[in-house]
Image (cartoon, rainbow, N blue to C red; front, side, top):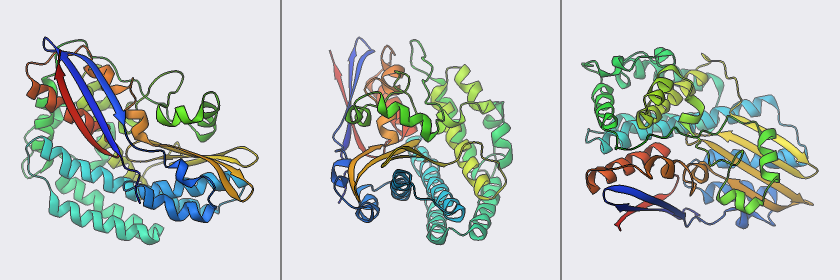
Length: 373
C-alpha cells in the first residue's frame, strides 16, 4: 500500500524566457485512509503509506495521537524517537550527497561507501540506544573528516569563505563535487535572482494556529505561513550558517541549498554524537484542545506535520502536511526562481530544473515538461 503519486512540473518558455511554471501533484491525501481507524491501526498503516521517511511519519503519528489524548511520553522514549529521526535523516542526506548530486554533476557516485553507512544507520535505528548511536556518529565524523568532505566536519558550521571549497582537494572525494557544483551554480540564468522565502523553525504550538485559520484540506494541499508559500528543509533551517548566508547574498541560491544540506548532515551527526546543543527540538507536539493534537518533526526534507482529531477511541479527522507540499507549492520556490529567468537552450534549462528539484527534494517521483509558446 502506498500513496506516492507523482509531481508534474510544466514549464512554458517564450523567446528564451520562462513565462510560467505550473506544478500539480497526484499524491492522494493519506489522511483519508486513516479516518475512522484506531490508534493501533494508524501506527501499523502509516509506515506502509510512505515509502520515504517512514520512521518519521510513524513517530509523527504516535506523537500527534499522544498529544490529542493527553498521554505522557517518558523522556527515554522521546530521546529514542529523536535518535531514530536523526538516523533516518542521515541516511537521506547521504543518499543525496553521495549518489544523486554526483550523478547530476557527471561525477562518480560513492555507491559502496553509501551502502555501508546506510546499513549501519538502519541497524542502529532498530534499538536506537544512546551508546550505539554515539559510536556510529563518532565513526561518521571520522569518515567525513578523512574522506567525504574537503575540510573537517566541525569547521563546516562556522565556514564563511567559499574559496576554501574551490581549492584542490587531493584524496578528498568531495573536492571535485563541490568544485563542479560551484562552477555549475556560477553560470546562473539571466534575469532577476529572487531570494528564497523560508519557513521559520516553528513550534508545534505556532503551527497549530496556522491549521485553524483556513480550510484544513486546502492547507494540506497548499500550505502557507503568514500568507506566503514558504520553503522548508535544509536551507530554511541552516540559512544563518555563515557560508550559506554568504552564498544567498550572492544570489547563488542553488549552491546555498547544497551547502545547507551538508550543514544539516553535520548537525545531525554532531547531535547524535552528543557534541552539539539543539536549540529547537527535532520532535515537538501540542495539545490543541480536547481530543486534538499536532506533531511537528524536522526531517531531512523539512517540516513534517501530523494533526489528529479523535472521535471517542477512533480517529475522526487526520491531516498530514509533508515537506513536498511546502517546497513544491504552486506559488513557491520553483515559480519564484524560474519565472522571468532566461536560458540559452532547453538543455541548460532542463539541467537547472533538475538541479532545483533535487535541491528541494520531493518525496515522490517527478516529471518535467517544457513547452514553447
